[in-house]
Length: 48
Image (cartoon, rainbow, N blue to C red):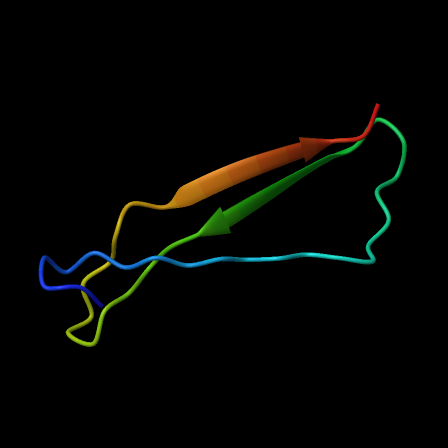
């Protein structure tokens, strides 16, 4: 946690299979020690 309350996270997903033409949405929300939630970070993965 930095002084301004921001935080940095790295999320790595490996060894998973996506069915053809399906979509996976990954959402990460940071929560600090006081229970405050940050803005969710969303990444979509599409297998065509």
